[in-house]
Image (cartoon, one colour):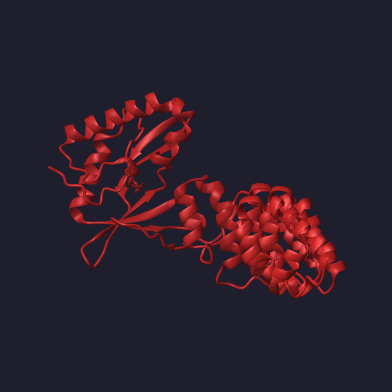
Amino acid sequence: MGELLIENWDITLEIINIIGDRVRKVLTYGLPSLRNLIKNSGDLRIIAEIGKASGESAKYVLEMGLPCFKNLIKSSGDLREIGLIIAEIGKASGENAEHVLIFALPSLGNLIKNSDYLRIIVEIINASEEYNVVVLTDGLPHLENLIKSSDDLREIGLIIANKFKKHYYRTILILRGKKEIKNIRDIEEKEELVDYYIRKLGESEYTTKIITENLDELASPDKTFNRLEFEKTGSVLIPLGGKLIGYLYRIVTQDAYEAWLRAEEFLTESDGTCHCEEIIKKRGKPRIIKRKDGLIAVMTRYAGEALRSYKPANQEESDEINRQIGWIVDKIVASGIRHGHLHGGNYTVLKQKGRIILKVIDFDQAVSP
């Protein structure tokens, strides 16, 4: 390879000028990996043409793109055709070119049989826009069992690109779920279920966590009870699914429960607006379960988006947020309750009747006077 580059120094210089600051990697790893394909100066000239066609993506196309598909390239004609398609992929990927060529295309190796498949990849990249890396790495490879032809690749690829755009966790978990995806309808059914939970809970960290940790256990809307998992530090949470989506049990000590009851009393305004995690009641009595281990399962409901994620995106509401925090702190001090960890992560924001309501949650370490 070195001799060929030196013998055709004028073409080599063209390639070096095209790839710029990645010249060492391309010459060390990229071109040598193609030595079985590059037989003469004509083949080398094709490499230069591919580099020119790739624009800013040239360094990635030559270093990572072409070597990954050498099994498809049987002649200089293939080199020209496939190389230029890979250049198109680089251009279509824009800022994601490096990730698409280094991670995405190699992960599709078993799916790409010929240049027709590569052309479809360009369509999929364009359809998935800036989320193309997610679709190509976390979407298509996990549906390999469904893709038997280029027509399958186009249909399935475009469905994923359009359905899961902007929903990273849906793409990963729906396609990597424990239960095997056997057809497109399986994907659609799972997404319909995910949409139901999002409609009920809204877009938030809590919603994302519930879905990602319970994808294969989410119950349909007509199921009465569905116990879900929720990994966290502090008190244990047991979110409920099915018809009870939005409700959860928080497991706390007797002391923490009594402090929570007192906090609810002090943090409820005259109009009934409550500024702490609400204890659900039936005929005025709290819905609790006294467990054999002495702990108490308290039924509550989703209390809104975490303040730490809400506030940065809603700076115009900072004054109202700070006012409510001040009011809450004053009331807690007046009640004599020690919350235990009254930090930003334990405030939530819920929108009710056109206004924001701040709430304090997680009373697992709270103590009453």
